[in-house]
Image (cartoon, rainbow, N blue to C red; front, side, top):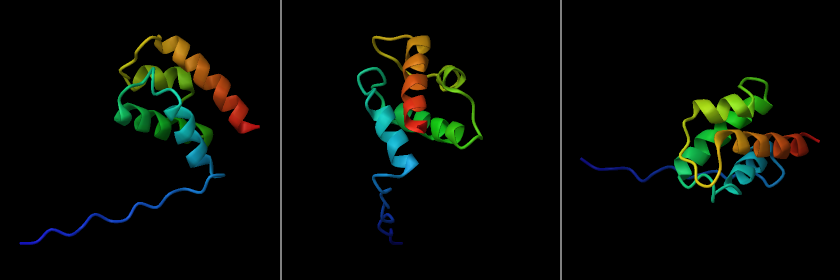
Length: 88
């Protein structure tokens, strides 16, 4: 029995909405220490921007994130502000 190597990871271009959202959420590394939490949140926010997901205040609450030095409400407000800048 043999194991195949993992498939290659395709990076998004710098100007894609996906790259912008994931980069935006990664700026909150101090508040969201777990990478998996940041990735889940990024995916949910990307769905929101595409019209298929919940707004940030619901998404932050439902994802049950491990947070440091901020509350869910504060994080949701920061994300809402940054996402509105991203939409422009």
